Length: 391
Ligand SMILES: [Zn+2]
Image (cartoon, rainbow, N blue to C red):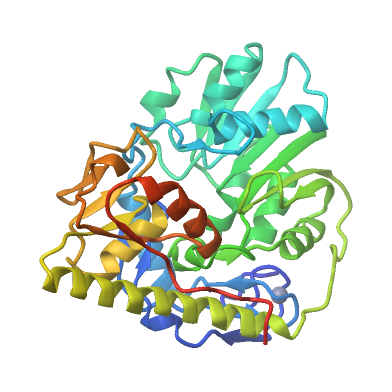
């Protein structure tokens, strides 16, 4: 129903309009590699879904990205810890399992399928807590099979299309994978068919309403907000039990069960959406302009210039500044001391006194970090402000 590459990935409408200014922006991959400009970004005038379209060019780009995908970025394949204010840092999948246990009863025995398993961090964490479960994985290639095979309880890695898997599961997880699929509504319908009668689906995607940086990720096709995720799930025949935008910051977390196909949680598009999407793209341009001029001034005065953050936003800015970056700063101790493209990742305490450090973060986060860094050496530069609610 949605195989036409010029239709909305969520609702199937052809009422799509391009977001101005996007094609000039350098981009980044989901494994944090800088990527050239030249993409397209669209918004559906019926359901507000911001999305790329699976054109021949896009499919060829993601083919290149996945062929060289870095399964083991800096942290050796383990997940990056998530810092929530009231808790000790925990890997994402552990937080998600806690969340799931609070929502539904998890039996002592069952079969779990993790779609988009990567190196199996989520499977391993689940297996530790539920050692009698059988663990299955699905991904694009068999590259991670040797690592997955060492996880206790691991059974099979599926690399065939989801609709060719001949098995039902008690739990299916899609942790940061749905946004990579070219027809997510069709994918969710296929996943629904993989669920046993009492099967449960857990989905987590970036919240497309929050971070403009996510728009830059080449291989993230649909930038779901809560409404678009609900719409997609309903059209796929899933009944939503929980859909939360506040469980993890900047993420949408959904628990769903097999249900009947519906028109979903349809809410008409609102006229602010196109303006907001355009503002986000303009803000990304504004960050680039500001960082470029700060870097130029720093270097003209003989001061080192660095970027705070070495994940997606930091690596995007690094690529876009084309060689003007001398170092990275990161608070994640697992990253400190590593080298990215011959630039050191520094502990904030080791930043040179005369350096300038650009905060490649959302403005609110950047303000909090700059307050924390007030006692550290170096001068921290905030990104431009971003106000999505004003005209
Ligand atoms: Zn739509």
